[in-house]
Image 1 (cartoon, rainbow, N blue to C red):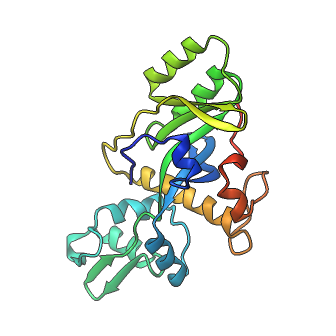
Image 2: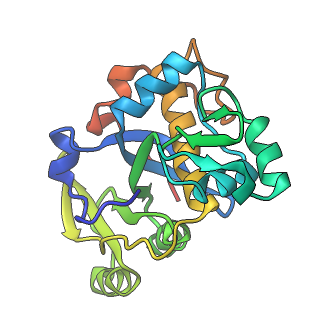
Amino acid sequence: MHVAEPVTPLQLQIGRWLPVPGGAIAAGHRADALVTIDDDEHARRQSAGIGAVTGRGLLYVLLSLPWGTPVHTGALHVREVEILRAAPAGVVDLDGDWVIRRLQTPLTVAAAVVEGTNWRRVLGRVVQFAPFCQMVAVFPAAPTRFGDVAWEARFDGVGVWVRDDGELVEVVRPEPFRLRCQKAAGWAFHENAYRRWISTTHPVASSPCPEDRPARTAAEASDPLQLALPTA
């Protein structure tokens, strides 16, 4: 559920990461997300008829279960068993007194990306995503006092990209994200990005976007030069 290597503009250009506008949500802030899809889990969910699973209570219980391994319900709290029995089809298999977790993370958010001209505001927003993924600040041009910007970005582990004649140029490399403890909030972070990805790539089949930005086509969502980064 995390990416060890720093994200780079080149990786985005060659399709290593898919941009999901508004796909990163944390502490009331929203940013664009760079993600990689688990094609097998996505296909399994489509077949089972389930989309994003964001309930913290359910995710918390699922984290206590090893994936694909039968667990006797007697080893679980009564309330945990009730939550699992109420889960959508395809999340777990329940057979008598045994339960098997089937749900896995459908995608991984490699980085949250915020673009703007006010560097303090941009950095202030993007650092909200430090508990979940890498962070990248994008500027349309090199900001004034760029030395101060670069120093503060390195201190916070934030990558800095600058647009140069339509191309994204890396100036400061983001610090790789290190997952210290797997929690329901972290899993929900990726599930929310998955829900947003579904809405941007399959707008007819998914629920309406809660934001005021319209859903975009799959072609637009995969074009890094059309990435509609949140501004600050």
